[in-house]
Image 1 (spheres, helix red, strand yellow):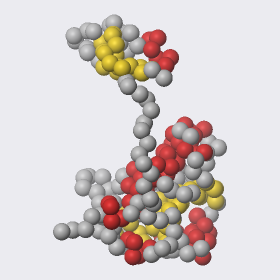
Image 2 (cartoon, rainbow, N blue to C red):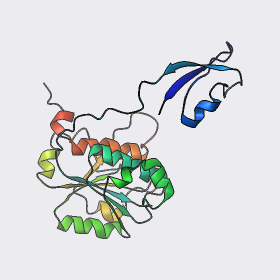
Image 3 (cartoon, rainbow, N blue to C red):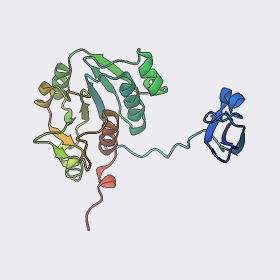
Image 4 (spheres, helix red, strand yellow):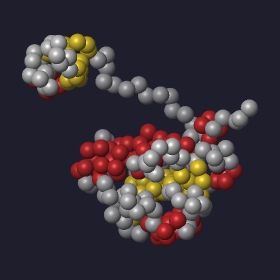
Length: 222
C-alpha cells in the first residue's frame, strides 16, 4: 500500500501528516486548517524488516490475572508474539480474542500465540507448580526484587525450568493467592512520580528480559 507524507501549504499552519489507502482522496485538504496541502514525501515501505531470530534463553508462558481492558490484552498478545512467549493463559475476567477489542489491538498476533482461558488463576498456578514451572510475578510492594538487580542471577534461580510470567489487574494487582505461590516477585524501578507502568509496558519489559539470554541484557560489570 502506498503511503505519503502531506504538508499544509499555509505558512501559518504547516501541519504535516501521513496518508495512505482511502485517506489519499482527502489528503490534499489540511485536516487542521482546511487549506490546500501537498505531497511532501513518500514512505519507502510499510513493511517492517524482521530481525534474525535469536535463541531464547528458556520457555516462557504468560498468565494474565483478571486484566480488565480488552485493549491491554490485545496489546499483550502482540508483545508476547514479538518476545517469543510460548502461550498465554487468560484468567478470571481477562477477555479472550473472541472479543473484537482484543483482536483490534492484537493485529493478528492472537492467531500466532496459543492461548487458553481459565476461570481460576490460583488453581492454574498451582497446576503450573506441579509441572515444575518457575513462577515469576510482576508486582510492586515490599519483598519484590528489582528486575535489574536480580537479572544476572535469574538463570541460577530458575535453572532449566520453564517460566510463567504473571501480571495482574490494572487497579488491584495480582491475586494474593497467586502471590503466595510465586517463586520470585519482580518489580520495575520507577524514577518519576508514578508508582507503576501500564500493564502492557511492564509485561513487555519483563517478557523480553526473561525470554532472552540474561547475560546479553545484563552484561557483566567490569
